[in-house]
Image (cartoon, rainbow, N blue to C red; front, side, top):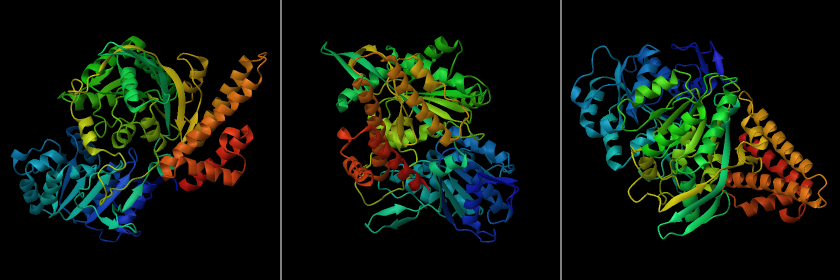
Length: 580
């Protein structure tokens, strides 16, 4: 189905809706639009798909049918309250985003209010009285926040139990604690485990196929890190190579340290990518996600040195943060640096390039952060996110299309979606956490281009910053269909291998070229197997064995280049059928 149906809507105010929005409305009101609709409705849609438009379209319809007379929108952040109010005003719904608990009745000029979950939790009885006084629709934006601790869940339930209608929205993986989210339905599966049940789901994969969201190209950078411990010992490690958990953590932090060259080189590469995108998307902007205020200011200074222009700095405790975000969204400035407060607080459709310069690695935070870059304004736009070559982040990047439900009746955090860490990641940061300071001093940190991750595949080989090989990937056109991105990445990788062969012409050890060719194919196959492991939960050894049974041939170490190519084609075919 196409992403939009111009003039399709048979009722309400919108002249056109995306296909998924129309389908969700039909799920609510029935295909003919005459059903009364349920009291509770959970919509799960990927970031950038248009949940706000759908929710306000539904609200307007319920108000026109006189099913409800007032609207309460519950948001995670102060900034989002204002975004909702501005969006509502465009469809004729007047929302007060400045409502406070001590204010009393809502002003007569407004149809309703936008409040935060924290505001509701502070005085649930007040909001219950408001809800009872008029027939109310309550919209829960990113409803998983309603489960931030038992007290928050109890407060949300107390405040909005009397509501006439409740619409819950979610755009990212659900929680991992075992506290039920108020007004969300759970059903027990054959395994005896209860899982949340959405009334309508629209994931990243279908949204990408519809052209509703942009394809995301992940550019991973490795490099050599050297640091000095408190005991005075110097340690060297290469990011992107197998390391212990502690070594990975320390090398990762050394890479992000403004004292080293890694982050400088990656920011310069990201700016070159932004320049390429601005050839066809003139107002394309970039966002650097920093860990703390000190790093944010240092990164902004680096960007000024690279671009000759200042970067907008958005700090979580800055009272003018919302104004800065809005102003950046309305200009064509190149860069903004934010201190991790991006999970649900930044909605700037022109963001096309990101730098993931934080050590926060929970899947929920990662998904929310990447969600800042996927909103498409016209078909063919691509997004590019630069990140350290760390196994945890590589796994998250390969799971972009995976959908998760909220699972009860199991040990907390069994799948690593750590909500306590997410809350910690999003609280205001003006310095490293107590006890979080680097237990070493960065001596040297240099970057190398490692690879590109896209649609479960890995492309490219190590290259130095500024090299022709790196530029081949930084120069990928900014307007491409998803299948064109895959085809071009495969071509760039083939060209890179061919160039390597030409450079070695005359080398008497001709077998090195063949060996390196096979090594690149093995790497691509292993990347796809790793992605399939994340997507299906099958052990990697089982996947390799299934590929051998399907395609024939010996184990990978003894397989020929043609046999490995056949397995690559087979696992890509599996992935295509699974998406279909």
